[in-house]
Amino acid sequence: MISRDIYLSPILNNTPRLLGLLNRNISSKNYGCFDRELWHYNTVDIACARKQEGVLILTLLYLIECNTNKYYRNKEILEYIKAALLFWTRIQNKNGSFNEWYPNEHSFVVTSFSTYAVSESVLLLKDEIAAEELKPVMESLRRAGDWLIKRNEPRVMNQQTGATIALLNLYLLTNEKKYMAASKDKITLLAQRQSKEGWFIEYGGPDIGYLSLAIDYLSKYYLKTRDGQVREMINRSLSFIKNFIQPNLTAGGEYTSRNTEYLIPHGFEISSKFNEDACFIASVVRKTLTTADSFPHLFDDRYLTYVGYTWLQAYLDANTDLDNRIEDSINSHFSNSFRKYYADSGLLIINDVCKHFIVNVKKGGAFRVFDKKTSKTHSDSGVLIKSNGQWYTSGWLSTKEQYDISDDEITIQGNMWKVPDKALTTVRYILLRLFQLTFGRSSIISLWMKERLRDLLITKTKPSGITYNRLITLKGDVKDLLKIADSVLSPSAEISAISVFAKDTQVYVPSSRYYTGIKLPAFQKTFSRPVSKVKIDWKIRGDAATEFIVN
Image (tube, rainbow, N blue to C red; front, side, top):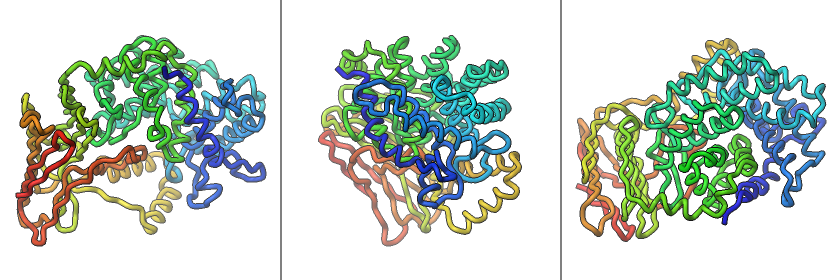
């Protein structure tokens, strides 16, 4: 039996860390700020408004009555909540938006998500905090809502789901119909943008972690509205996401658009009361929490404040019918062999007696495979080569790859992509600050800058003239789990190194690249004299060993 208590303990264990991030000095102008880098270390010049979402963690802890929760109805915690709410109002931009990374960012995501966390706290505590004390908070909430009404986020739809629940909360607080209407408009857009396969776009394709976040926000919305259209969207997403959980109960990674590897729990507990797929996923989340090397334990300080409250909400809305079904729900899912190909996203999943295998043919054949015999997981982000001092990868999400999938083989070919490896320098930092403090005061110019930074750090890179071909053999010698043949061809003798079998994700995503477990080391071969072509035949054997032959 794994009860709902499994959600509560990791947050309680991390609450002293959370409170250490909060400025608790009433004499400080930053009293109530969760950004320790601002108020204590003095290493940043603005407060990250998303970190104020930590206020919802404190709110829930204040209200959860449990023998292990020493923060229940604690007056000190209530004072910190009020301070955090007021600090959020003080860092709001004049137009109602908020910043996450730099001044005058006018960020859609931080405005959406922090508005939800603050409004949810107010809804829960409106009878605990005097109306006069909440007045500036309500004024800021209205300004944030008015800003969100006029804007949508078409490139990363999880942010759109956050805006829908934020606006719904504003309607519940104010009874102003404009917020409900805007919330419904954003739901309509989400329905239009949801893939027929069940996922929402995240910089060109599906991402498992961010899809779980979208399910989370939509489930919160459904819990408050019982909207049938939202329930259908949730059901489609659940049908998709369930197939990307592997027998070792990990999910996501290098084959997705943003490389995330976590599952946000609250939405699965809510939807498990009407959807069997959610019962399986909620069971997985509960089971993973029995070990310390799982989320939210793995999150850094930033993401503890961002999403920690969802584990507490999962505790409050847990499906108690699951308590004694955890093992059966998990085992029944993996006991049946299946093969599923999602053409829109390029994702192929194979679950058979030997392995659970996931590959993305639109991302250079990046894959993850779980060996059921040895209980080992192997991952590969694609082919990496070094040419003229610059690294290139096949593992870049693209619609330009050519691929063929048969029962026994997968062939992918395309161009290698330049690996972006941007780092903030002192000069760049100063120039960005100068730009944002002058031209960036205009929300239009600031939005233009935001899109350019997204392109630079996340979505844009250059294809090279270097081509690759990857052949994955699925059924071969019974002693081998997988066989892979990789070949790379350059227009000239410029290849000085090649690497495969690496977990090497290049897209900048703040909530990725957490350390999630030990894997075998990547294979790398350097050439004393650069070559124009190279071929590697390699295999993952049934005994979990690997073999590499370079030609």
